[in-house]
Image (cartoon, rainbow, N blue to C red; front, side, top):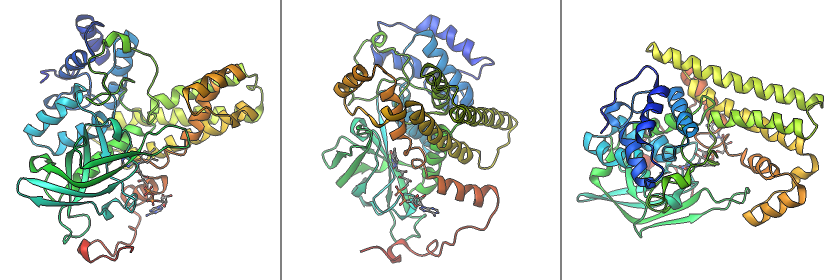
Amino acid sequence: MTTATTVADPVTAVREWLDENWDPDLTVAEWWERLGLAGWSAPTLPSESYGRGLSRSDAVAVARAITEYGALNAPAGLGLLLAAPTITTHGTREQIDHYVRDIVTGRKAWCQLFSEPGAGSDLAGLTTRADRDGDEWIINGQKVWTSLGLTADLGMLIARTSPDAPKHKGISWMAIDMRQPQVEIVPLIEMTGHAMFNEVFMTDARVPHDAVIGELNNGWAAANTTLQNERAGLGAGGAAGGASVTPGTVAGQLERRAGDLVSPAESTQRPTGAAVRRRGSMLNDFARGAGKNADPTIRQDLVRLHILNEIGRLNGMRAKDVRAGGGDIPGIANISKLLMSDVVRLSRDVGLRILGPSGTLHAYTDDQRESLNEATGNPLLGMITGQALYAQAPPIYGGTDQIQRNIIGERALGLPREPGPDKNVPFSELPKNA
Ligand SMILES: Cc1cc2nc3c(=O)[nH]c(=O)nc-3n(C[C@H](O)[C@H](O)[C@H](O)COP(=O)(O)OP(=O)(O)OC[C@H]3O[C@@H](n4cnc5c(N)ncnc54)[C@H](O)[C@@H]3O)c2cc1C
């Protein structure tokens, strides 16, 4: 584990470290082992958990410095974003060494098994069951919307371990092996043409008892840590960057030469605040190139987009300062996520208006993309239509806009809570849809 302590200037520190350590001839696995154990893969984690205790904005600066240096960036994905901070907060020392080490070194990729066909916003209504069998749990149920499930080694599973407890109190958070034959992963094709998420069917799947993270039946607390990290990471406040190379044993990248995979391209999955901001300035250039920057309505929207992005950036800085003084801004993660929804919707609208009628064309495969670029002479077209189609996703994932507003109302503004007559009733006695 790293012995790193918090440093005054993390960007200088990581550059000096790269001078000593970056070697393009290492395999991806060897490089990520170095990067992760030095605390640079997930620098927001505490030093006892393979990190460096940095703020989120410093971590973004570190990721950018690694990219600018020309080295392969940290393993991206939900392991780093969600599982590692959850296990760090709720896991035992052994669990941190077992799971977080493999995340920061990119050895294992994770997916998030929270949503179900009947439990999304009302997540605590989940019906996936976990029944104890000696030292193991037997899992039966279905999850849906499981992003990156096909390349995941492990899943962050929340399942009902005590149906006789009220619905928030009988849930446990556990790490499930996604590669066991009792777990079936079925891809769902999105309107973008990609299949980022999946349905996951678990039929008598097995989880060892020592893979339960946090207290048994108190998985709601761990799930909230996962969700808070999701909102904070995905919001306009920015998130730690990551390589476009998929971690884990399934994607088959670990034995490749690290230097061959270095790319300035940002991940197309789940845009971060910083990535969304870069796209804002790309739209400015695009409008100029297309001769649309003199159109007053487009100019107005580009300025609105700039203002929203600036608010996001400044909110991130404000939150950092308040946190550095030991405080907190109630609801800031929810506000950041709402702001990102506004930014992606406005980017979609202004992008399509700049494109005009050709915005109705979209390439669903690589072959189609090539033909489209050739036919229109505009290589950015596919990217803008792709982002426009994907713009429906950020206002839903990680908790919908409506749910973010409910949380801000109840927890930040102190408004009356939504009526919850089912809160103290055993889950097994609640009425269910047939
Ligand atoms: C791109 C993408 C990736 C995702 N990846 C994952 C993943 O990896 N793992 C995972 O577990 N899940 C994932 N999700 C699922 C996501 O978390 C859920 O879609 C989300 O929580 C909403 O749940 P739902 O789809 O069941 O909608 P519902 O909860 O059925 O909501 C339907 C509508 O009702 C509104 N609504 C519901 N309750 C209230 C309320 N109390 N007050 C006001 N309005 C309300 C909602 O805002 C929404 O508009 C992903 C979703 C998307 C779009």
